[in-house]
Length: 454
Ligand SMILES: *Cc1c(COP(=O)(O)O)cnc(C)c1O
Image 1: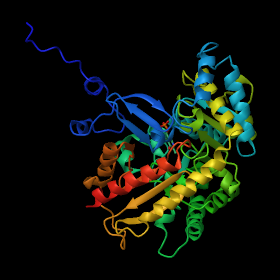
Image 2: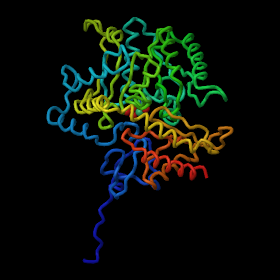
Image 3: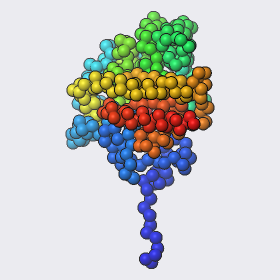
Image 4: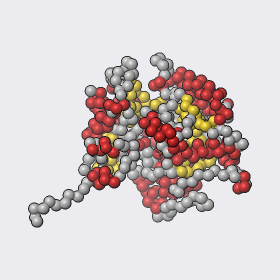
């Protein structure tokens, strides 16, 4: 009896692989790729059950803005838990939902004065698409039932949001289920001609947009874009002039502009909202990810009085907006969002970020002449490195060689979470990151890139 083996308690990772199906994952990969079992997180660091720690260089899928478990957000949530957890938001309201809407309206681009809550980014996009279409329907123009989206854009993965997404990895398989948007070529500066500036490329792409609107405006409800950075499509960046011109075109052709700030909002691009850099007000602005500081799922769609007014009528007119998620405006999530905004208000966040972003940019210069780096780009606290087979021709590495995965695996060895998008290695750290931590993540990325291109 004493010789019988003590039953080995299964590790958390092993138990996970028995029951949990992970997002955006070929589960078979985990026969060789370790499943990280995280038991604690603090600031920019994730601590695993095996005692190892990892620098969260991509802010837990871009949600985390001030680092994990920011004391102010933790304290706010504890206080909120002692008052009110969750109630439905139909027929009743609560302080965090109202206060958050007030604050968002105060901070958002001028004219955005109404807030509709949902509980994740994709849902916010669904709300904006439906609301725009429904606006035109209420105005007696139901034929405006199509959307213009940008090539390389990403707006989420539910059926509607995926329909206006143009990233093949997510879209191609499900294409038979989706509606077809009108695709406008992206102003992505990387796609410009040799010698063409980002600004010139933006101007040229506005000509394409004008042509599309001339042909299609009568059937278009809205144009949807990710302002300044097309994130999931590979951190593709474009000049703010494009947004200025797009706003003007949408006005001229009487089409809504939906700004999907789900990834770029809350300081990522250097301003609280990316639209500020073009001094434009969209007709709809979608927020999520950083909205709660990365603690709880929540999203919001902001819109203007004209849109709100088009739905406001006697019940019998049948004009009400019809959309509801059970967890709409969850009180805990709203409270976390209020604490997030309070931190922006009380601390010099954007100012500090400018210093951190400059340091990050400086460090990346090391790669400027690398034979397998075609582009290094940065907008605020987002920086990306485009790996290619050959720098001169910019010929890409075939996707199935999974070069980016090698960078990821090297990062794990060195304790840094990098999760390249195909062959684009990027950094999107939480704002509590130190310059020493930036040095670490860049050093590890460079080592990983050397391994990946070998
Ligand atoms: C992440 C993201 C979404 C989808 O948000 P989820 O909460 O993941 O559904 C939509 N748009 C953009 C620009 C995003 O980056």
